[in-house]
Structure formats: C-alpha cells, structure tokens
Length: 464
Image (cartoon, rainbow, N blue to C red; front, side, top):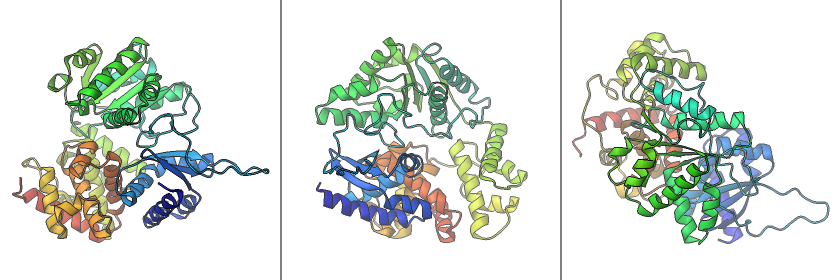
C-alpha cells in the first residue's frame, strides 16, 4: 500500500475514533500519531513519545485496530513504535516501516518494533492481579496453584492447565501470573497470547517463509501463558508446532500455563502426545461461583467504580445470576444503566424489573448465536448477510456491535468463536464491540431499550 493511501485510511479511522468521544486529551494524542507504513498485513504507527505510546497500548490499542480493520475492509495487525526525534542536521525520511522480526500479537502488546531484547511486558493487562481476583470455594485450587506457579516459575506445577466454562476468571488468573512474575523480576520474558494469536503468528511465519523468527520469538520465553488451548483442535500443523514449542520450553526449564474450556481428556481432536504433556503437570478446574463469592464480586466491582448500590440489590443480582462472572457483572451494568437512562434511584424493584426477562429465576433453553443474529437482523431490519459482512454503514455497524454484545452476554462462546460466527473477524474486533456497547449502555436510553427488548425477543425466539 502506498504511503498516501495509508495516510488517507488513517485519517478516516481517526474520524471514527473521534466520534467515540474519547475525550480532549485522547483526541489530541490521536492527531499526533503518524502512519509509517503497511507491509505483510501489518500497519505501523508512530506515537510522538514514550508516554503517548504507553497510553495508546493500555487504553486505545483495540479501538485503533478495529477502526483500521473497518476502513481497510480486512483484518490487519497493529505495530506501534516511537517516532524518531528530529535531528538538527537532517530528519530521516521513512518511506516504509522497518521489517519486523515477528508479527505483533493482537492486544496491548509491548513486543513492538525497536523493543529491547528483553521486553517490558507482553500482552498483560495491569488490572488483572491476584489481589483483584475474588477467591471462593469454586476456584480455590486454581487460584492457589496459579499463585504457586507465579512465585516459583517452572519449579512447582509445569505445565499448569486451568479449565472450565467461559466467564469464570481463567484469563484473569493467567494474566495475574504474568503480572506477578514481571513485578518480581522485570527482566523476565513473559508472554500472554491466545491460541488464535499463536495460530495466526504460525501461519504468517510460514506464508512469509520466516519460521525461524517465529521459533526465536516463542522459544525464548521464560513464562508462556496461552489462553483457550482448545482452539488447536482439528489443526494438525498448529498442534505439531505447539508440541515442538512446548517441548523446547519445558526441557529448558521454562514455565507454561494454559487455559481450556474443558478437561483436556474431552478434547477428542487433540493428539494423544499433547494430552499426555498436559497431564504431566497439574490440571485444575474452575466452576461457577457460589452465592457468597458472587456477592463479593459485585461489592468489589461497585467499590472499584465508585458506585453506591444498595446491598439488597446486589444480593438480588447475586441470587438471580449464577452462571458466570461475566454475566454477573453484565447484570449489574444493566441495572445501573436502567437507573441512569431513566433518572431513577437504584432499588430492588428496579433491579427485578430490569433483569426478569434477561436472567429469569428458572433456567431456559440454551440460546444459539444463529438465533441472536436472526432476531437482531429482524429487529433492525437489516439482512443477516450485511450484519456479518464488511459494510461500515453506521446503522449496520451498530446492529453488528449489538449482536456481538448479546452473543457475548447470552452464550458461553469465547471471543474467537464469536468472531468466526460474524464473518471470521478477529477476536479484538468482538472485544471492541462488546466494550463499546458496555460504555454506551448507561448513557444512551434508546440503545438500552433496544437491548432490553431484543434480549426478551431472543429469549422467546423459536429460531434454532
């Protein structure tokens, strides 16, 4: 892609980002970002300084990547670097980005171009710590095992595999391990990556004939944290590559931690040698939290956000929503949103009225992603093909984001699974859609009502 064309795409993406009301400081920061180049599916952007780079990685990485994906019409990877300082002699002319030694992973990656040999961090979210995790009977073994691994990497349980349904804190524990290790030893090479990202990196390395760079990247890690390992099922080449990476790290005395949505013995399309490797360490599960833990989660969430919610309301939500933590926090968000958009106090009656159709006391049939897509398309009068297509029309994008949000809320599908059901989109696109709706729901009355009505329709839908 020519530099001028990339500049045009970046300017269009900036207009989308500014429309999201990011605030004056963030908007000014966007204007200082310069597109350097595009090569092999990687867009390279330059921030003006280290402070701006860190801010963008932490708060706006996914939003920027999603905006670029929308305007380019296909998924790209985003690499960040710091602009070269202007010299008194002659400024360098950058026509194309330096060739990366790896394909940057999606999310807040700090394995950026020009990074030192030992990275500062790797895809870690600072708020995911052991202190912010609520431990209960349902996750005590997983929590204790994760702490033990973090305190003595490769000396206790190696590998450690944590399994259980979506939304129960597996990713939180995985990230907490990485953050603790990095806090104790900033020179440690820690990498958090989803299995989807590992697969994409592997495929890319084959396509550009740079397998050695892929090996150098993944086999020089001290602590490798891989999420959703079930995603390697039925991917023979990826399983073979992961097996080699696993063996290399394990023999070198490096720590490996994995998460999965089920016990590895239930992964029928996983090779026996991988199942054996996983069983050689510790396999522990997490299950839906009990009432006391659910209530503690809600109390902590309110404290963190500075919200004053009556205890009886929190207890009502905790009793009603017992499936997973994500749905629990989503129910709290809806109650707060209902009070905000209608300018009402948060009361027990309001909470029960808001949640009665969304999280009924009695269990109902399992909801499918197809049903959500079908009912969302009908509600907004937009064909399903357009919702899962590549159109960037505001109405279609809004319907798409709502459907992704509802699929995340009402099913147990992971972000990569939802992305596949919405036109093979990257998981970061789904995360951006979900976060966007979560940000808007408590201030946009029309959006809140749309979601309430749609949820009720989907619950009653006869569509399979």
